[in-house]
Amino acid sequence: MSTMNTTLNSLAGDFQSVSIGHSIIVFADCFEWLASIPENSLHAIVTDPPYGLLEYNPDQLRKRREGRGGVWRIPPAYDGIKRSPLPRFTALNKRARATLSLFFEAWAAKVSHPLRPGGHVFVACNSFLSQLVFSALVNGGLEYRTTIIRLVGTLRGGDRPKNAEKEFSGVCSLPRGCWEPWGLFRKPIPRKMKVSDCLRTFSTGGLRRKSEVDPFKDVIHSERTPKAEKIVANHPSLKPQSFLRQIVHASLPLGEGIVADPFMGSGSTIAAAEAIGYRAVGVEHNREYFESATKAIKELSQI
Picture 1 (spheres, one colour):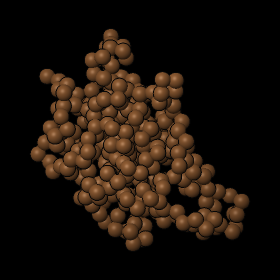
Picture 2 (picture 1 turned 90 degrees about the horizontal axis):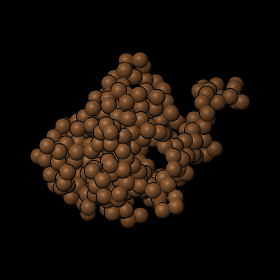
Picture 3 (picture 1 turned 60 degrees about the horizontal axis):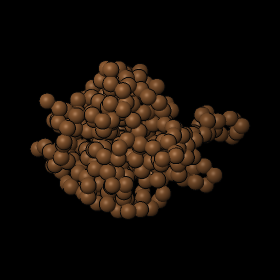
């Protein structure tokens, strides 16, 4: 039997959890958590998953902090600007890519049980892996809707060939990155049910407009994450609140329900939900990030 009136506390189950404002955060592996919660208990998912599947392991994070690299590449400074480390997605071999595909296919299948029919899933990605990841999510049972383009000057790419910068000063190995793809997916609406029917039955199926006259758009101009937010929430892939609040706002078409982030990190998605008055649940299996989120969410939501 479908659960249509889920409370946040019931979503914590037997896992450690902390209540923050309208929301709750859970210390758990997202696969175990997704399997434990009731059917139809989530209205939307907004998340930024790991992509190397090992870049957030403790040993790799330690190497990143020490500037030793590992999976995290330390890019050269550009025009005097020191750039943040980034995972070497371009270095993933055939086996790693197959593993990544299987991971996201399995994740999509797990998501389908607790997500209401018509519920949307926003997934942050990158230009190197979006085709692979989005195809895997479709194979796992989600319906691809479109790609949200986050326009942002990341200062990544545009470098001259490594160790031959002077010899090939007029060459760049990749274009300078100026956009970030966010896949937009939906759990299929039941057969013979229109979007309006789904909205009446499940409060899902569509996206919330920015206003009565302004629909949600698939291109969003975004700033880089402000330094003040990075100080509050120390996470390598922290997205700015100014962008996340637009995504989270759109995720609940009627402005009601529960938004989940199964890869919560330091809690920026939950903070965005708190800022606009939505109920949310975040799940994180890394103890350091979970502890950070317990302190960062309230402060981020007030920025």
